[in-house]
Image 1: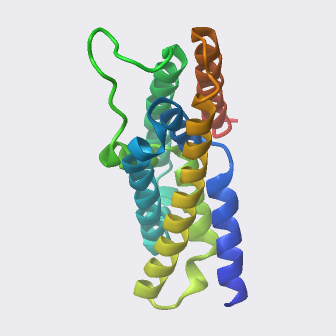
Image 2: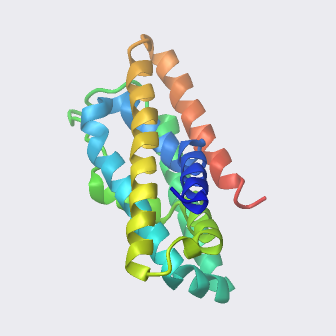
Amino acid sequence: MSESIIALIGFAVAATVSPGGATSLATASGIRFGYVRSLPLVLGMASSLAVLISVSALGLAAVILAVPSLALVMKIAGSAYLMWLAFLIGRAGAPGPKGGQVEQPFGAASGMMLTLVNPKAWAMALGVAGSFAGVASDPVALVIILATVFGGCGFIALSGWTLFGALLARVLKTQRQWQVVNGVLALMLIISIATFWI
């Protein structure tokens, strides 16, 4: 395995495991719905990350960097959407029927959308485009390598956070405990958004 591939895998592991918007949402979903019911969300986020990283390395990142106003609009829209999700997480209590309706977890399509508006995912994409686009000279090989590495690392990392959430849910007994955990997750999401504006 070449040194550039090893460096790419190291970057992907660090970037996908570190706390951020996607990991907060995966943990929150694991807490509320368990791992199996959260799997479509995890698959959606991981596959969308793989596609985003690949197309960025093929030139999308250059377009975004060349049009600063587009990058700003994407950053504002993504941050606003994630803040709304933080609000929903923060005000949620213990899982269960709300107003006679059973809660449903986010699906794969929502996971894909969440990745596309996540500033951390875009920061990763821009970093990969600038640092690892030369991993392969053939564009098809580059897409396959990047999609495999980031899709795989993303799936493993998000699965870990989701499983952590599912395990944490087993120790939460009172409404107050649920409120504290949901508040912490919402705060983590807000902090992850704030880091991209500071």
